[in-house]
Length: 251
Image (cartoon, rainbow, N blue to C red; front, side, top):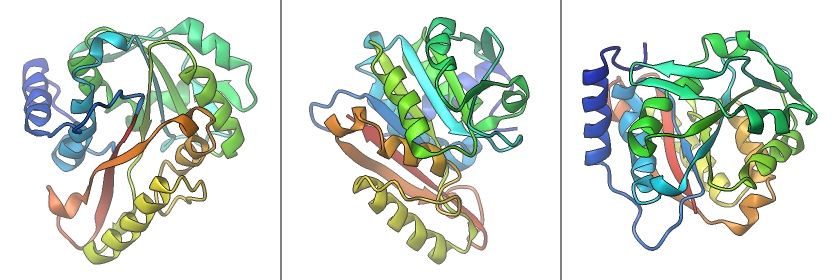
């Protein structure tokens, strides 16, 4: 539903998006990304603006902590999957069961296969990660209703593990006209750059994850750069009811 099912076509599509993107300039060491999760014709170029920043760091990343909102199933807290791997047309992605066990006991964390079964916010990131990183292990977390300090504890625990990249999956505003969405999204991005953890769901569907990220101790030592902001009216949709997208680099 969100990208090509054929492996060759998917590979070529992702590679073309990455090749067209401009990586961040300057001597940066990527520690995390904030990326959108719509269908690739809509937000793929915005996501690629962040993923292309990993090209020179791929050999130093062995684990990806991937957090995104739970859209399909109500989750109280944060849900880990019960599986051993996720699959895309590009092949399986092994889950880091050891890292998952280290956060499984933290407050707010549960295991729910149902929360992950139809959740696109996490899976849509995997082909980009597969093409940029090659081999890696994944810690996927579907975040529902959860206070920022609990999300921050999970983020800090995973982020303190060596060779770990944090990826936060979120879109911005939903279904406003183009001008309204642009105004809301500009404010949301400014809040993130100021490290304000007071976002709500109408500003970003991943507000719970973003608010937790802003409360993270690990984030205090990092810079946040906005790489790209646009919406579906700029890419593959009309301008009457748009969805906003933003790409950020944490470095």
